[in-house]
Image (cartoon, rainbow, N blue to C red; front, side, top):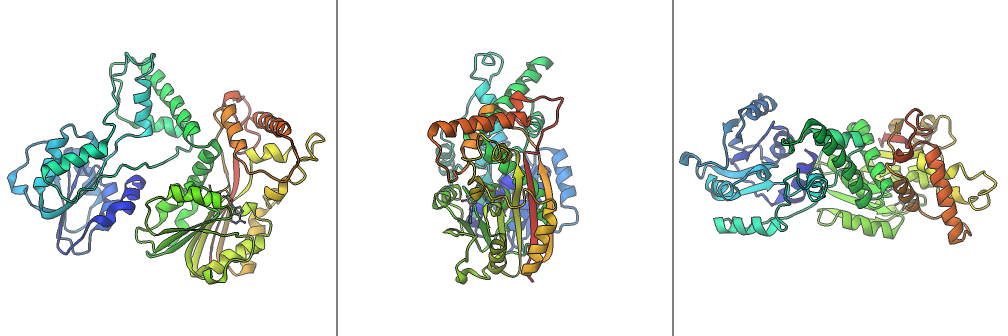
Length: 498
Ligand SMILES: C[S@@+](CC[C@H](N)C(=O)[O-])C[C@H]1O[C@@H](n2cnc3c(N)ncnc32)[C@H](O)[C@@H]1O
């Protein structure tokens, strides 16, 4: 649902809706995407909405999903087959998500879409050209170990051009085909394994043992994709934020047309993957802010092409530009406010930036195993001199607080927030390898010190050893012992301005 919603937010505005339209969905599946993503697009006075699929079982599920909804009908339809001519020209809009990549006869299927549309009719189709879960198979089928046993081939290298050409040849006009990536991080290795298990069996010629072996090889490759394509620390942060948004994001009350702010957006990935899917399609604006112009540059790339998004350099730890006061209905922040020394000032700023009735959802890190690897070296004879300014940057004001939930509640209420909710949650997962843990540490910002390059490397290696001793590195893990620390200990805040 999140995936389809993401593409609708980006491109759904291209559909021009009129009164009394007849709408068809092709390949509705169980109808959940239809209900949550497509149905809200329809104007109130649509004439009929027909959900179709070639599987009677799916139609049964979809019927349940739409029980009691008026002007909705269901139809068994195989888009690859010859259609009854009575259906020709019967629809003003045709919608479809994640169906056309399962269709073998692309030409016939798109020709059918053309025939089903009335003159002037429009179609909006989301299909997958590939995905990390499928890539694991493509890549393994090219390795000596699996080449003979797996017969899978990479598909079209330029799907935009192929589909565009096909549609124009059929007679479509105003053709727009865009290939875009959607990132989703599996919070744990087990989640990834379970997803692979749920996919259609692609290895029917293999024995049970071989299937198990293939599954584990795909899991390993998936872990490699993560460490290769994104910093391991970011993988954990996104997984953790996603988890916390699932736990607490439901507290936010959305009405449409909101002005939204992200404080300390960093590279923008957490906003994009975890908070952005919460926004209603008709949000008014989204402003991403950070202290660091470098981070804003990355965030700009992350949000390239997304409408109504802007960027601004803001330090949330000092007085913020007064003209911004009262201009946001929702404020998000993740893993940023724990870097701010003047906590009262940061939360006062959040309060002032909110419009009356505005709400915020803020995630602060109390501590994290990967920061503990340095925190615990601060008082050692070997490192105390070099690390004496470490906490100037890695402030983490609630690390030593025995009741941070109460401290924050009191602080927020004293500023004027109402409905204050503060919850401490632990998040657990492992770094798969020593290298991935080292890479995570390397990505941290520097702090005031006079260390030579060699000393910095030595500190890094001592932190790595510390992490291994915490039992948080999969490769070196002793399964008979628990982790010494959760990977992240977080404080999630929800609060409202009266
Ligand atoms: C650990 S990153 C988190 C980024 C992003 N929110 C996320 O969840 O991935 C912390 C970010 O906070 C920003 N930051 C630190 N102090 C800040 C301040 N006083 N005002 C605004 N941003 C700040 C940093 O530049 C950095 O991009």
